[in-house]
Image 1 (spheres, rainbow, N blue to C red):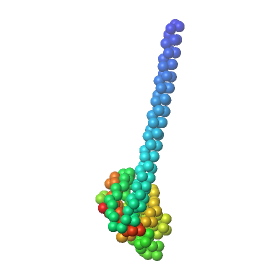
Image 2: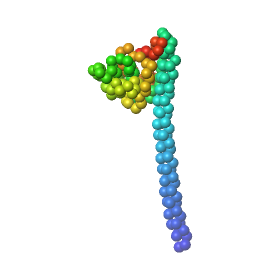
Image 3: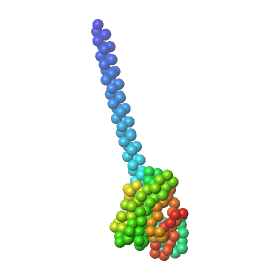
Image 4: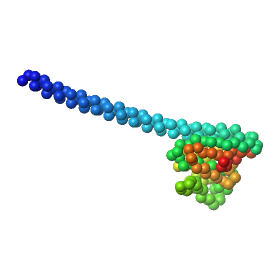
Length: 172
């Protein structure tokens, strides 16, 4: 009889160990998932900072060289549809003029970016990532048509031309 009681106690002990091992496994998997999600979010933030820095450096490098033309390729995460550039000096950003209803044209859809025009009229920003997550203020850009919206294909390709004081932005 004594040996039967020992065996039953060992089975209960093994079940407890399996439950404990399962809980530890679940905790490790949960922690790993959260860590991976955190790194992915940080990577997108780094790409957006690189986008802004590369754009600012390209504008600064070309604006004073009259007639210089550069092809600039900027990486943008694929979750963003595109980027829009507005010129403060045109009627598009003049608060007294009628709105132009700017749009981002993509192969599968058209996105209205009226909010970007409104922000430009307030003179707070003139470069916008769509959907709106970050706005930039680059006063040294010039857009002949008032605004230009470029779709994102993994890389946003634009043409910068130096005018002596500003950089003219257009589609490549």
